[in-house]
Amino acid sequence: MSCYDKLKALNIELPAVAAPAAAYVMYVQTGNTVYLSGHIAKKDGKPWVGQLGKNITTEEGKQAARAVAIDLMATLQAAAGGDLNRVKRIVKLMSLVNSTPDFTEQHLVTNGASELIGEVFGDAGKHARSAFGVAQIPLGACVEIEMIAELA
Image 1: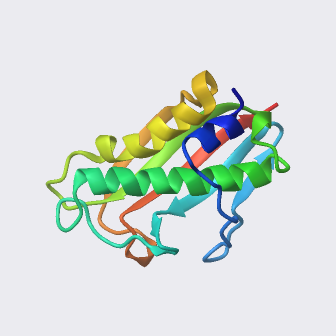
Image 2: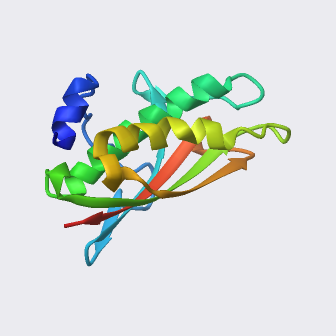
């Protein structure tokens, strides 16, 4: 089953690629490796604002991370010349979770992205990962994730 069949089965339609919010590009490719800039969580097209441990639950954070993964896949599709089937491997995710000092479930929040990527890409979606708690993310977003992928 192709990644597009999996997306369809999950009832996921990839959005248009977001424009950069500052002085950077959405992705850079060197050789077969693509580095995707950090994407913030969005809800209804606007930044998904909040802080884990204060006004957002772990489950809501997990849904926010899943939403980021969908946006990352849209950007990855653009980087792959419009064809996600060119993705050989998702190499790494780095997740920043806007959280209070005592919140310690950043890894569970980030599972929202990791699990979806695994569902869509199968074994090629198994990736290395880091998940950090941070004091703030641009625009007050609750989660930001960046990705490194290898293309065939």
